[in-house]
Amino acid sequence: MKEKPVLFIDSGIGGIPYCRDFLKNNQQESVFYLADKKNFPYGPRDKEEIASILVSLMEEFLKKTEPKITVLACNTATISAINALRENFPQIPFVGTVPALKPAAISCGNGKVGILATERTIEELDSLDLTDKYCEITGIAAPELVEFVEKKFDAANGSEKKEIVKKYINKFRGENVNTLVLGCTHFLYLLEEFQNEASPSIIVFDSIAGITKRIEYLLDKNNLRAGKNSKAEYKFLLTGSKMEDPLWRARALKMGFELFYFDEP
Image (cartoon, rainbow, N blue to C red; front, top):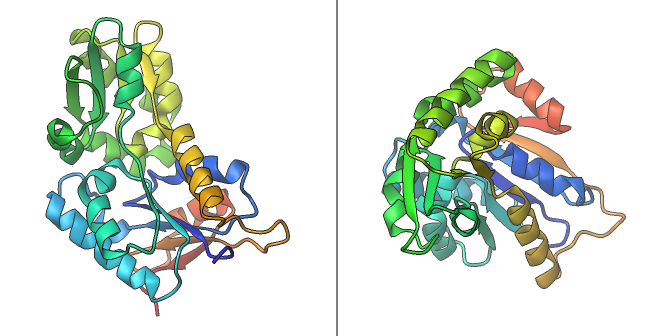
């Protein structure tokens, strides 16, 4: 089991920053990244549909190999499906990513926290026990920002990135928030732009470091660490069309991963 991979799942490229952060100090571990391009984006879908998609995805993955830990590197997937996945696959430890509202609330001087996320995450905020009841939360859904990162980020210049981020920062400033949570993993590609535009009046929070620590904790707790002499495999799995896609191959290559089409036998 120690030689099995750690699996990261996202609807697209949003989970890659989590994957990269984990690999910084865990290069001996085999890591598979599964991008569910076929069902992108998750945000507009209802909770039950997302759960069904991810349970089916895990069933197909298990026909190929069993991961020792699975990371839902997507806030929407975590909120919608982590309970269903844990119920259906009790033998697999699942790590979810949720908006970093608790640390943002602790640091929030005036009691106003902003969260930028998908439609599904914003709709589920009231049902999440992520902060205390005294913290006022302003949520803004940004589906077009998810699309920008997934489809335009690679070719976008600095000015384009700055302008799309500035629009949202201005909205949150208008709501007088002073801490901002990036509640969608896709937005982490623009973390530097958000920090620059938000400074000094708004502090930006993300959950990357916390997720890496959680994975490492589970590896140690369950004695799942790969040996120092293990031959690590890095695979980038893509659902959907089997047609050659230079953009996705370039993304995999940039990570140092080999690209495979998940739907192939």
